[in-house]
Length: 435
Image 1 (cartoon, rainbow, N blue to C red):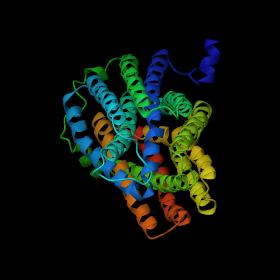
Image 2 (cartoon, rainbow, N blue to C red; image 1 turned 135 degrees about the horizontal axis):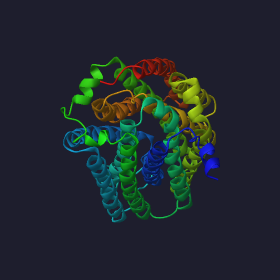
Image 3 (cartoon, rainbow, N blue to C red; image 1 turned 60 degrees about the horizontal axis):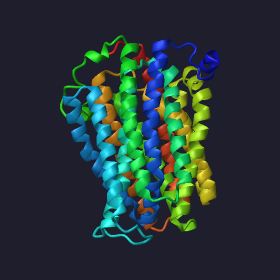
Image 4 (cartoon, rainbow, N blue to C red; image 1 turned 90 degrees about the vertical axis):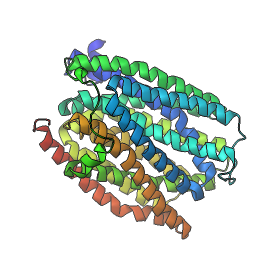
């Protein structure tokens, strides 16, 4: 049985230390994504209730919030060792979810088409939307920052797909629970997400010990994550073509994803008037997407990374997105777009995300914790905000879904070229000693 499981998970060529480190990091990712996917349908329901006319406000608030969070993130990174830094950030998010859940329970529910910054329920709803989005960025960043700090590039190619499997199983579990509980009060779901995140802190501590054992304890000696100033991430980004390329790749990804979000949100608003039905659809999309991702991550991701290479893997998502944009222009129906959204997210989590994380493995610790955090927070949400401005401008001028979709198509070509260039550059850096 043990040999069968090792073959199934493609772990026969991994050492015992690699298996333990991979397994506990996957459990850590399971808890983080389980917590997020309990909250995601609630967040998307808030966005649909506010309507596409207010999406720009939500994206703007999210950008400001994440940009403000970047400074305390860097300050903590300068002062704390990884074990305390990551745990404290996750404790903070868990506590904030409990407070938000209690606050939402004390306010009247949101109503379709009723929005105003002077209304407490709207203000809290907008903050909830932005805060959950911030958690989706920061939580995932912390998992992968921890992983790339210990795994080499070759280990990442072999094992990051299985780390993603842990997150996907967490997302499947949460999506199934969210789908079944789509008619339950929001507060209970939010508090449950906080409890799952606390379990994630326990899993992180076990993962940390396993990873330190894998590398012989060398990384454990670092007294803190980094020592430079809070703007070091931006300075490193400006001074490196490689990091600028990663930032541009993430920016293109965010711009295209925002176009899909606008199209999907508008179709849901028009064709699904009831809030419970919307939450049910969002949960079902999440569930099917993660089930498909799980199959690909177990049997395909590792082979693609090792045989096709990073460059080819990073081109998959742009090509799939081009297909989806064409489909949105021809057939703007919520059921059709929901089906494609499942496919698009499958490719994102099975190929794009593991491949993108491998790009950081040849870098030093300063770059991993600071430039990566800057790219995955400020740059990513800058892309969301810019995409929101562009899509909102098209909506304001009366352009339909076809214009929204086709307007994003040229970005895909540049996105694919960047993926190819970054893959080749990563291979060159892999052969160089780390600075």
